[in-house]
Length: 147
Image (cartoon, rainbow, N blue to C red; front, side, top):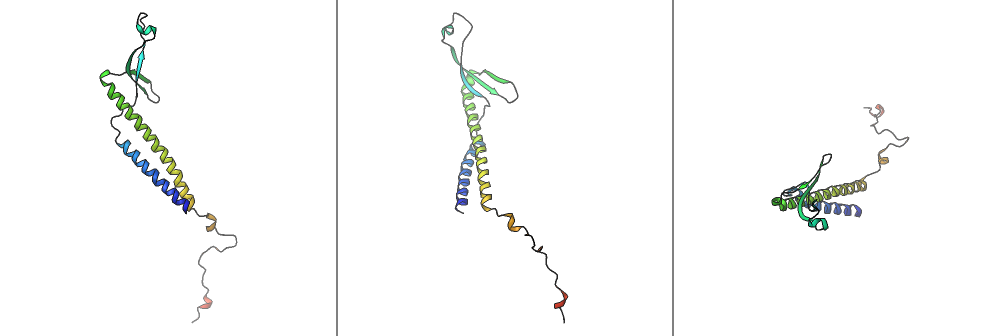
């Protein structure tokens, strides 16, 4: 049973870690489901400094990839750039924690399967062997009931 004890301890540790992550995803703060980045640009003026390699910027941009929908990559309102950066980071942390929870769930599930295997008994212990009686109560004969 030493193996069972170790598996139980591991499950307990994983559950504690899972609980901490769950607490963080329950209160993530504001989330911007997009990536925030700063972008340097080059204009089309041949006499501009950017024509020689010194680009304009950095300018705040957001990028959002919605599954099955159009990609969105656009400039961000300058006054809201810091919020966009913070909320985008909140979302990144939220997704990382959520993915860790899912991975922990898989690991816990595998460990619980091990606990099950430690406690399983062989079915053949309960299967009637060839030649054994069925296990019903046998009728008592009337021979021994003389009064």
